Image 1 (tube, rainbow over the protein chains, first blue to last red):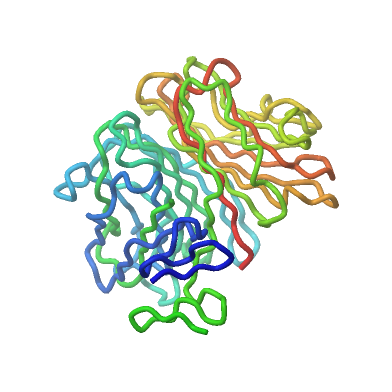
Image 2 (cartoon, chains in turn purple, red):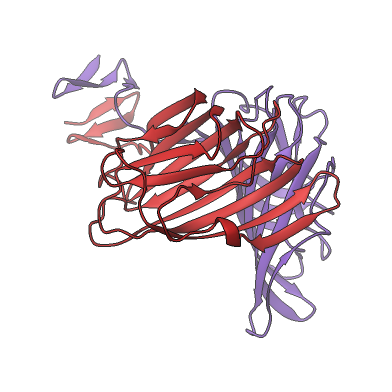
Length: 205
Length: 200
């Protein structure tokens, strides 16, 4: 049965008609960490969408200090994660006391043709129950077999470090230097588990 | 009268009960050895924010930057006065160079030229740039029109860059068209999508 309004078909046989404008940010998957060693997305990353967005929300580490949230990609469906990447990293920061600010390129945290996991934030800690980080990554055309794959990332972290509490606004961007299709992503902490947090994957129509 | 399908109310009293989303695809254009890509419709007062997604933009000519400009006359002319900022983070594949710096030479102070949003990009087969550009309330006849752009791209000498460009079209005329092009040569390939972002 079709629903027609003003001559326009809105619903035909139970489905919204293509002429009805619908949203373009399509939720594909949600995963929730609970003392998880890693979270992997191994399906739905293909040529259906031109770009994919990950949103990571309230990521809380399971291990104290010198620990950060990171991600990598796979060209073999998740059998291994270690695609060659060149990227940049910088961040402004400010402490709660209002006495320290900064804006720095992070030469120690960027990568040049490296296959290591890609850092997405400042050091985090499990010491304080309310500390966490949230942010987003957008990756463009991961299934291309012609171009390298660019990504844009940004995260916001609240951390305690050397007796000070800071807000850190992290920017990371770069490219997976491969012409093979990327078809899986994995997120994990540098050390220990992801104690808590949600990661959502969207396709952008 | 509600319309119920398999126990779910889809339409109730003429309104959709289901969320239709807030990011609405308005237009999509694909370059193929194109001198430029122009969006001359869809930019009006329907949405408060418009977003362009720039995907796999590939230059036909080596060592040239990607640029954009606005129009107040539906695309007859692209030369709106702009004041802009630009900064970048960059890092090369050899790990011998990095930077976080303001781009003095490629910003504009009340300029009417096309605004650069990338480094001088390479044209090797796998080199390209991708990113996003937000344009706020382009149809306002009260305020200047702000934009923000972030663009990941490869400079021609095997360097990766994260380019940030922002500013405003310094006009109280409505902006109703946007054009993208390389400073030199064609857009060999690439896709640009225009979205409207609905009021929450």
